[in-house]
Image (cartoon, rainbow, N blue to C red; front, side, top):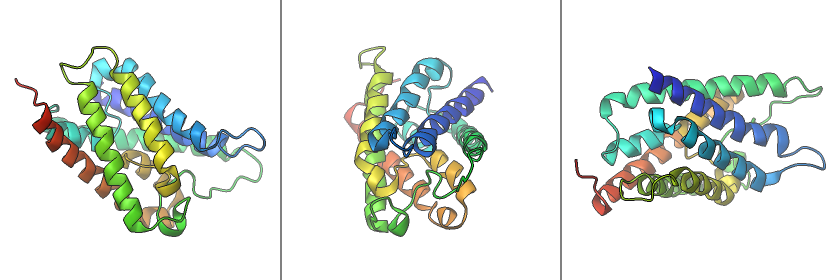
Amino acid sequence: MKKLVAEFLGTFWLVLGGCGSAVLAAAFPGLGIGFAGVALAFGLTVLTMVYAIGHISGCHLNPAVSVGLWIGGRFEGKDLIPYIIAQVLGGIAAAAVLYAIASGKPGFELGGFAANGYGEHSPGGYSMLSAFVCEVVMTFMFLIVILGATHPKAPAGFAGIAIGLSLTLIHLISIPVTNTSVNPARSTSQALFVGDWAIGQLWLFWLAPIIGAIIAGLVYKYLAPVKE
């Protein structure tokens, strides 16, 4: 239960910090932090949580990460579904808090609410195929970094830095394409509030990250298996 509470809190922080920066700060007149600021915010949420809860739950914060670690032989399958449920609930709770804050501004309009999308809902107008490829590849690379940085032979104590910076880089690359998911819990939390098109496109932001994570788990297990 402590692990599940940690995953709930960690995913809550990721969504509140990352999506909150996009909804509240990115477009603030004259002082907006822009794509780079949002990318850094997402990276910082993971970096800080790795050191806060990594020793409790492993700090997955992401159903795709949990799947990739399971495929890579780093995580027990019996914990997979409970972790995913805790992550999704943490993301939804954060989205609810973010909505409560954002809606307190006069003239508030929900808009995209940091949801992920493709086609006309992609920030750069990218197609469904572009979005799918982007999410698969970015999640694949994210899991490669995670699996490498947390390997027993990797330098101890630096995993959080590598993982946080990799998520920042991923956002710098892919915000224009999909608004960056690589995390089904993050996507679900925002889509539930936007509804309509965001719910209709949510399938891609579950399927593509999980495919990327599965491939990464298999590849890294081949490259550097952890012997029991």
